[in-house]
Structure formats: structure tokens, C-alpha cells
Image 1: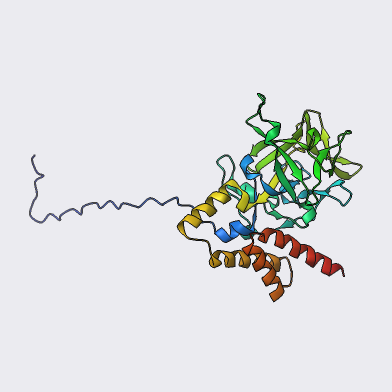
Image 2 (image 1 turned 180 degrees about the vertical axis):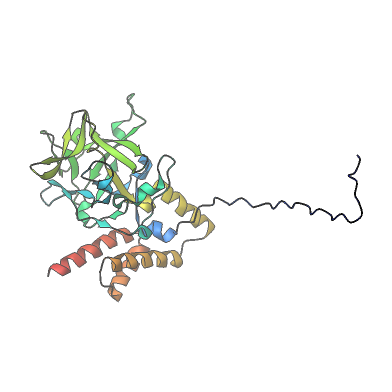
Length: 308
């Protein structure tokens, strides 16, 4: 190879230095196990829907205006009648956890409906597996799953003969078994339709009064879409993350303490006065794995005290 001629007085050319910029790592921030233990999350898969749940929706409007509204929650009264109620607790984004999903824009989970927690124990249903209803059947739909929903007073959510919905039945039959259909909306998160046969649960307005009922028409106006909120620790991802954390580091007093701190922070942001007795109740509940349930009781107690 012939080298380039050089002459006396020539200044040597500076070699071009190529700086290698390290590629940023895409590691996701770790989620605090204490937050998973104490918060609620929006179900994104059928396996998430187990244990205590909230069935929530919006009075939908054109565009995205409804995303700024106070969500509605399906609530039975003392006589078993069902009402859409607004007395839901909407927490700050830092007090809840929603897990990323491939077909959903993460920003969609910032809406108020994806940050709700129970305002009253009456709003909480327990999801009940009804696998016996599909065993031996050849008509299993992979896009749907069958569940029943039970109140804390052991009454089941039911479709009535005239298409209404109530919570008066003490046993599971055809009118207490619902098919849950998953619906992913890119910018609004994962929603579910609730079916019984050919009828689906919808939010309707009659003479300016909102109500839930089952309808058979094919109109697709999104009044039949619901966000199902579950305890984060019971969701598929929450269980996995807690299991992985436990395997890497035994969950002990540090985790319980973190859960209690999150719970206290949530109560204080709601304007609830904290006492040593409150802290003891929360700690005892955390040790038993019932911190979420105790948070509901504390909020109810505060509401009752304020009325006195």
C-alpha cells in the first residue's frame, strides 16, 4: 500500500474520534411491593378478576370528556336494589398501581376511573369462580370467562325476569352466572362487557335518572363497558411481582411497614385524622393480610363520625 506523500511544514491532521454513546437501558422502574399490597388496580386479563372487585363505569360523552368525570360504581342498597353511585374514593396516581399492557397506551391509566378505591364496603363484590358452568361444554369462548359476584352479605348479583338487576339471591343459578368479555381501548385502558345469555349490562338514563339494566339490542354506544378494579395483590402481575420479591428478599417487617405508611398517607390525603389506635388497627390488619379491607372500614368510620 502506497502511503500519502507528506511535506515539511505540513500539520498532521487530527484523527476523527468517534465517541460511542451507550444505549440507554430500558429497565422499568421497580414497583414498591408495599404499594402492591395496599392498593387497587384495573383488571386487564380474566385471571386478574378474583377476590374483592369494584364494577365501575362512566356516563359516557362524545370525545374524551367523560374521562374527567367522577366514575360511577355498581352499588347494592340494604334491600338488594342496584344503583349507580359516585361515592368512590379516587386516589392520587402515586397511591395506585396499574400494570402495563401491550395493547394499551399507559397514559390511559391516568384517568380517574383507573385510580378508584372503595368508598363503602357495600360497593365491594367478591368474584366467584363458576368453572362448573363450563365443564364438559364444547361452546367455551376463549374471549370470555364466566363468573358470579357476591356481596359481603352473601347475596348474588342477579338478572331479574324483567331485565333489571338486583342482589337478592342466596344461591347461584343461570341468572347469577355472567360471561365477562374483554374489550381493549387503546387510549382508555381495558374494559369489560357483562353478559347473561344474549343480554348485556348497560348504564341507561330514564327521565334524567341513571340506572343499570340488561338489554338485548345490538346498539354499540359503549354504555355497556365497565372497568373492573381488583386488589393489586390479587392480580396476576401483582402476584408474580410479590412472589419474585419474596424469592429475592423475604418479606418482613420492612414490607409491612411500607404498606402501613402508604395506607396512612392515603387516609391523610382524604382528610382523615390519624391516631395511635388507627395505626395499631392498620398494623394488625397488615399482619393478617387484610390491609385493604381495614382501609375501607377506616374511611367508613370517618364518614360516620363526621355525620354525628
